[in-house]
Amino acid sequence: KAGVTQTPRYLIKTRGQQVTLSCSPISGHRSVSWYQQTPGQGLQFLFEYFSETQRNKGNFPGRFSGRQFSNSRSEMNVSTLELGDSALYLCASSLPNSSVSSGANVLTFGAGSRLTVL
Amino acid sequence: GQQLNQSPQSMFIQEGEDVSMNCTSSSIFNTWLWYKQDPGEGPVLLIALYKAGELTSNGRLTAQFGITRKDSFLNISASIPSDVGIYFCAGHMDSNYQLIWGAGTKLIIKP
Image (tube, rainbow over all chains, first blue to last red):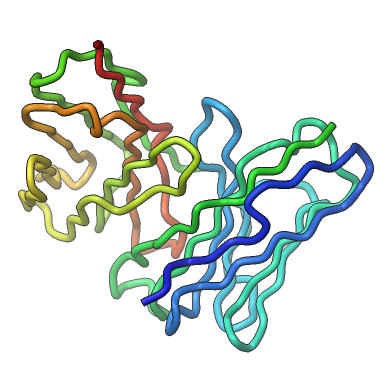
């Protein structure tokens, strides 16, 4: 069973540019979450998508956006890049769980996309 | 927002030593998860806990869901070099789909 695939693994951009990162979840997983991880920092939640709808959103500026396609694949976009956007961006997928009372969505993470902004 | 207090922030230990780390919260959680992240990789699930008081093992790792539902503990016995990495706790409350994460415990094994 293929894991969560993120592309690209590494990329370098300059300030002001925009970037799109891609995530292919595990087959059958319909929820996709995105996290930002900066050096020495924990996991900062960006947003979560379920059935092509953003279900949860973290505390990030509007430059960070995402979407999910009908096949559950997801993309996130960062516009007008800043130096502080340099980070490891992690995608995680989980099984369908539309009920808040049915237990946690156990997340399976991809290896991440490491973005460097110069 | 909600936060988990994870401690210690980092640990320097000798190979063969036992390791303990914990996460606490002022809120009640229904699920506790423990993940490990190796350098340059995404976190990998180690143990999932779903009931208060539950004690679960995965090889040399043992985790417990606190009876107050506000804390969880992870123990690693007889540490080996491949145990180095960052360990994260995460919790889930019924009131929110989103997992709440601790800041991580960095485990370093002294040569």
